[in-house]
Amino acid sequence: MKVASIVGARPNFVKLAPVSREVRRRFDEVIIHTGQHYNYEMDKVFFNDMGIPAPDYHLGVGSGSHGHQTGEMLRKVEEAIMLEKPDVVLVFGDTNSTLAGALAAAKLHINVAHVEAGLRSYDKNMPEEINRVLVDHCSDLLLCPTKTAVENLKIEGIKRNVYLTGDVMVDAQRDCAKIAENKSRILADLDIEPKDYCLATIHRASNTDDPDKFRAIIEALEELGDIVFPCHPRAEKYLRQFGLWDDLNRRARVIKPVGYFDMLMLEKNAKKILTDSGGVQKEAYLLGIPCITLRDETEWVETVADGWNVLVGSSKEKIVQLARHFEPSQERHDVFGKGDASIKTAELIEKLVCGSLD
Ligand code: UD1
Ligand code: UDP
Image 1 (cartoon, rainbow, N blue to C red):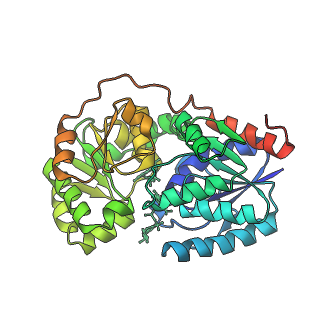
Image 2 (cartoon, protein in one colour):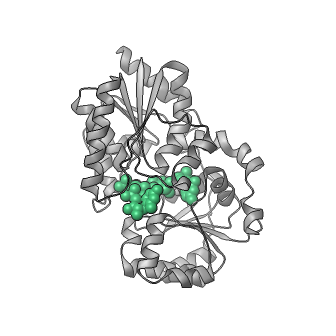
């Protein structure tokens, strides 16, 4: 039995790592890398840190407009799948690589399994929301990280082959926590002390590509001062374009994106986390770090309901106020599962192919 895992961007790699390990215990796996992300620190560092096997195919698609990028991926993923003839194509999350993989496989009548199915922000201006909806609607196996995700699918009439697995990022974090602790030197390299800084990540197009919103967020970071900011290439591009780069560098620790081990250590030791990333909101919750989300809505509603995450959009005043004063008031719960999502994923894929799903 053969599984083809399609990945291309940073959050895909983090989710692939624990799943690939479990998949390989049971089946042959080929990894098809679209090349959506390609800088060492956005790509290879995750394969190295997390022990992900080297991709069998590297399609080298790179950056471009949505249509161009997704179209190139679709064409090239289809070729790879036709050569490999897998029983299942496995896709992760909500990137353009996820959409291309799912669409190529569905049109070839190959089973599509979607890890992180059912997430919704209900904001169609978000490219990821389009990807999620389309991928879920052409998937044969929907692997949901949360109960909310299962309910979201129900509302859209998707009830068949929907399973609550928990979140594979719990598994990823658990697998790497100890090694990160031993291997990462990031705090020493940056000469920072635990709980002496806030960690910021910003890369959502709705923030970076809008000069007014991005300026307001950056002004808030500058006012806060004690910020470490691993800067996504998209954010760097627009910071330079909008003339914000030099001032920000004077007032905050702007660094290149970091590998997974360094990121876990930066997250764990932060006073607070300010982010527009989906994955980082979740990791903040799992680590018990208060999170200030630089968006108006989130797919990870459980983190907000539990009082550990607060949505502030791009208002400078709100960001500063909450970064200084927000304190979670409630206990955290087991909302993302117990760290066995990858095992459940591999078991369900096996049942899908054998025709023995309940
Ligand atoms: C993509 C995903 C987003 C995810 C993010 C994770 C889509 C639609 N978006 O957004 O869901 O949260 O990845 O990081 O799939 N660039 C480089 N080097 C790289 C990668 C990107 O310089 O290795 C620059 C290029 O200028 C590129 C821009 O970043 O145009 C955006 O990259 P792209 O992959 O299109 O989208 P992301 O913003 O990274
Ligand atoms: N991440 C990382 N280094 C960074 C920024 C993020 O290792 O400099 C990790 C982060 O810990 C999480 C994943 O990348 O596991 C999230 O990806 P990202 O924020 O790019 O995308 P999103 O989750 O928003 O789709």
